[in-house]
Image (cartoon, rainbow, N blue to C red):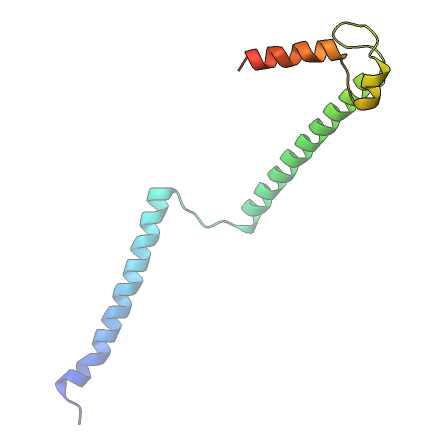
Length: 115
């Protein structure tokens, strides 16, 4: 025999489930309105990955171009600031140097004063 309480139990379970589903739907709508949240499709994620790859490629190319420019400047024996020959000792100590010791010192003093 079923009592009145046990027969109403399935209804309570259904009511709780419906309440949970409704709450989940409401939260979903609220998130969409509040945060502009939307489900990301594989296409959107691929587009973002493509943009990131292009940005990384551009930054790498720019870094390589800067390095090549510095190497080209350092290949000459003349200081890029004053035009005089860079001493052999400086060339041996810093093969990448594009300025003589005096001009490099002036650059560093200007940089410190600019802070």
